[in-house]
Image (cartoon, rainbow, N blue to C red; front, side, top):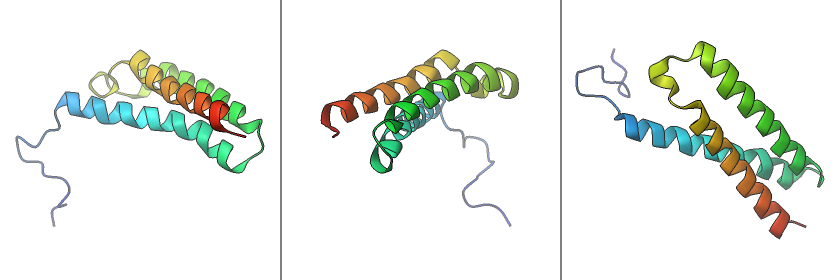
Length: 101
């Protein structure tokens, strides 16, 4: 029985630009969640710990893990991916510092 979510026929390919946009949206949202998650449920200092942990994790993932385990076709630009992680991280931190208690 064929999987209805995957059609291996020719022509069923996600365009690279669309794939990259979806990936970068995921990186950005992960950066947001690293700060908003702790800010929502934990004491004040944890929002900074979340931001710092995201920085360390994104560095290790993008410039360590991805270089070894991802294929060149799927990897894309590690610097671009890291930038989107940090953009989400910094935006969330700015919002929490501006509007948080």
